[in-house]
Length: 63
Figure 1 (cartoon, rainbow, N blue to C red):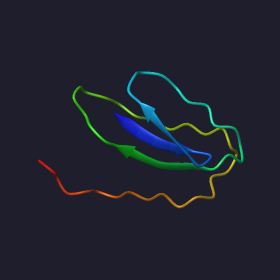
Figure 2: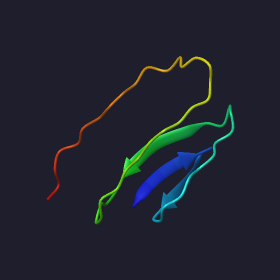
Figure 3: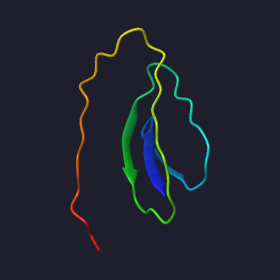
Figure 4: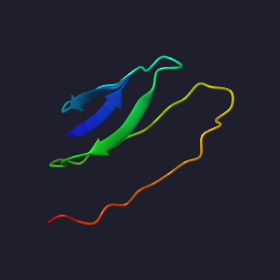
Protein backbone atom coordinates (compact mmCIF):
# COMPACT_ATOMS: atom_id res chain seq x y z
CA UNK A 1 0.00 0.00 0.00
CA UNK A 2 1.16 3.52 -0.77
CA UNK A 3 0.41 6.60 1.28
CA UNK A 4 0.57 10.03 -0.33
CA UNK A 5 -0.26 13.41 1.12
CA UNK A 6 -2.10 15.65 -1.34
CA UNK A 7 -3.03 19.18 -0.27
CA UNK A 8 -2.59 18.23 3.40
CA UNK A 9 -4.81 15.12 3.24
CA UNK A 10 -3.38 11.59 3.43
CA UNK A 11 -4.56 9.28 0.67
CA UNK A 12 -4.11 5.51 0.75
CA UNK A 13 -3.55 3.76 -2.55
CA UNK A 14 -4.09 0.01 -2.68
CA UNK A 15 -5.00 -0.52 -6.36
CA UNK A 16 -3.48 0.18 -9.72
CA UNK A 17 -4.26 3.56 -11.17
CA UNK A 18 -3.01 7.04 -11.83
CA UNK A 19 -3.23 10.31 -9.95
CA UNK A 20 -3.44 13.75 -11.55
CA UNK A 21 -2.23 16.58 -9.33
CA UNK A 22 -2.85 20.06 -10.79
CA UNK A 23 -0.04 22.61 -10.83
CA UNK A 24 0.40 24.40 -7.52
CA UNK A 25 -1.23 21.71 -5.37
CA UNK A 26 1.08 20.79 -2.51
CA UNK A 27 1.86 17.08 -2.50
CA UNK A 28 4.14 14.45 -0.95
CA UNK A 29 5.59 12.74 0.93
CA UNK A 30 4.90 9.46 -0.80
CA UNK A 31 5.62 6.37 1.25
CA UNK A 32 5.51 2.69 0.40
CA UNK A 33 4.00 1.07 3.48
CA UNK A 34 3.73 -2.54 2.37
CA UNK A 35 4.63 -4.50 -0.77
CA UNK A 36 3.05 -7.92 -1.28
CA UNK A 37 3.20 -8.05 -5.10
CA UNK A 38 5.68 -6.73 -7.66
CA UNK A 39 4.97 -3.09 -8.36
CA UNK A 40 6.29 -0.25 -10.49
CA UNK A 41 6.13 3.47 -9.85
CA UNK A 42 6.78 6.27 -12.28
CA UNK A 43 6.38 10.02 -12.04
CA UNK A 44 5.60 12.16 -15.05
CA UNK A 45 5.78 15.91 -15.35
CA UNK A 46 4.89 18.00 -18.37
CA UNK A 47 6.53 21.12 -16.95
CA UNK A 48 9.10 22.63 -19.34
CA UNK A 49 11.68 22.89 -16.53
CA UNK A 50 12.16 20.94 -13.31
CA UNK A 51 13.42 23.17 -10.53
CA UNK A 52 13.24 20.61 -7.71
CA UNK A 53 16.23 18.79 -6.30
CA UNK A 54 15.73 15.00 -6.37
CA UNK A 55 15.91 13.29 -2.99
CA UNK A 56 15.98 9.62 -2.10
CA UNK A 57 15.66 8.23 1.39
CA UNK A 58 16.49 4.55 1.93
CA UNK A 59 14.97 3.17 5.10
CA UNK A 60 16.34 0.16 6.99
CA UNK A 61 14.65 -3.20 6.49
CA UNK A 62 12.01 -3.71 9.22
CA UNK A 63 11.68 -7.47 8.84
